[in-house]
Amino acid sequence: MASSLLGLTACGGDSGSLVGLVRDEPLEVGTVSMTEGRVDADPQPFTFVAAPGELLVVFFGYTYCPDICPTSLADLRAALRRIGTDANLVNVAFVTIDPERDTIDRLDAFLASYVDRYHALRTLDDAELASVKEAFLASSSVTTNDDGRIEVSHTATTFVVDEQGRVVDEMPFGTGADGMENDLRILLSTAKRGNS
Image (cartoon, rainbow, N blue to C red; front, side):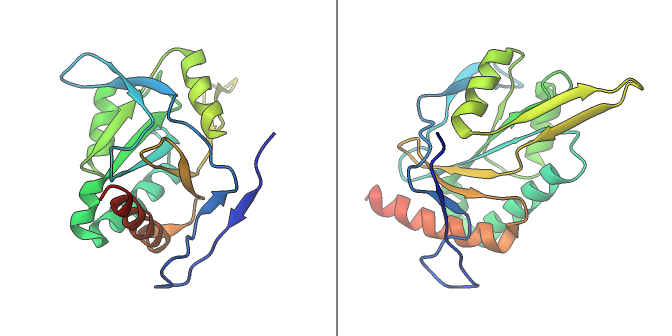
């Protein structure tokens, strides 16, 4: 049974109002973990919880994505640049939904072109990926057509998780850099207050 969504909107500098969607009952994702691929180290389990006083931005996508993933990550990059030093309090977790093609090296290079702090999450275990998607109510599919073309679809929402492992904001595709900046500023202010 899905919780209802409450959409809170903000215009420009209307402080205190989130552009993204906030659930009446936030998704609890802090007990879910997934394999984090690392270029220079063995894979480690990663849990979807922000560090104290920080935020974790979670995105489901793939490196071959022609539009949604690069647009969303470019918007996030612009938003982080605008918030200045507070960008150091935002970490990114990118869950590949196309692990067959998204190698760790490819994921690392892709994410490094957008953000400084990130976790490249990749698993070939369908059940592990399914459990993470289920926790976020996300979906994806990767199919190969008769002509050999690979078709991919996936949830295009950018999720923001707090230090309790709760999804505190869900920014739909098209929120843009302005909306992301607005929401991250508001949520970081709350996160820092809660950690002081």
